Image (cartoon, rainbow, N blue to C red; front, side):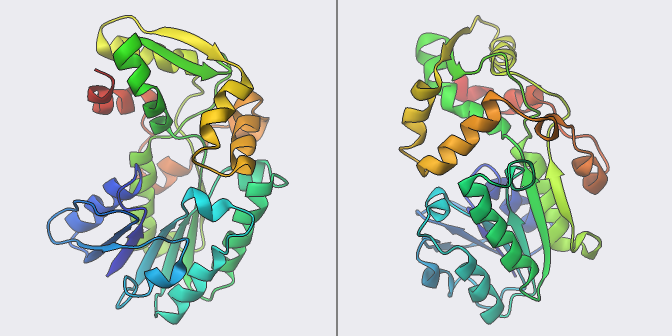
Length: 279
């Protein structure tokens, strides 16, 4: 049995579906009640209270670990989840980490995530670490403004990064959970192209077949809604990257293709699959 945390999110949902379709027994863990694919067990648990994960891990052979925003707070103890996995008899863990652990190792949230990576590597379990950059699905934050005002509002409109499709992250995670060849791997996951927020808005307009305006936010205007959902340190680290990506953050990684045998999906593919959110 494989446990998927964050199972209702942009990565966890397609991962849960892929594992179930592969014939695996799956336990989907989410903070709130949720519909899951037929045959999948659902456990409602908040990872900020690790003891809630114990029942989900009963009988598990592998764990996909995705940390919610509050587990990046300074007083959080996400490494405790690794101890629970070991105690529960889990044999393999795949951690969704962050590109910034390598590219911005001194950022506060990156230091905390590095500690979780270290706990995974030192656990004695089989492991793999996924380090994606920016998610294509972050564009869903613009969905309401596109629907109601025909506008995208974002900071740093002409600064791009190679955003990755969450479906590609999910497929890589499934491969790491199911295939011993990927054990001990650290995978940097990006899309196939550097794309700016303005270019993303143009891709959405093209898929809609109607104009979409672009309004550039200041850093503070962008930060204000972010800190309602994630710790300020994580918001600041993220804004540092998207305002001035360094060469490592602009690099197109070969790792999606190395694991899946195909190129990563471009942003336009993600838009085409999710265009209903913007109509």
